[in-house]
Image (cartoon, rainbow, N blue to C red; front, side, top):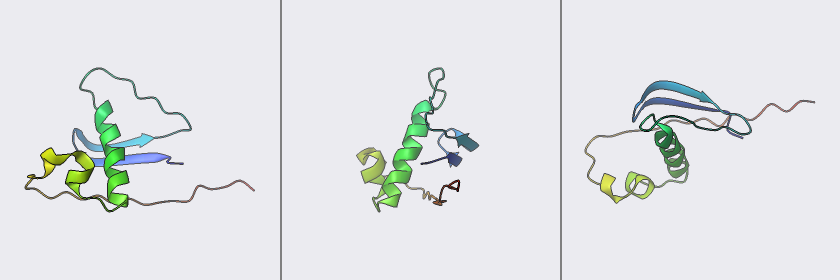
Length: 81
């Protein structure tokens, strides 16, 4: 289970951390970043599968001239014994 999402310079998130539980609801006003969090998960899923930016985010991003990267770490969940 994912327990944390940390975003740095991703869309409208400069340096943010979202702690995730078994059920996490995103609630906010229009244009507050809810869809950007969804896009972050979509981006992470895509790069972990080896897709390029156009395949992940859509064809309109093919002509993006800047480079972006992503870093992710899989940390095993601690199991109580």
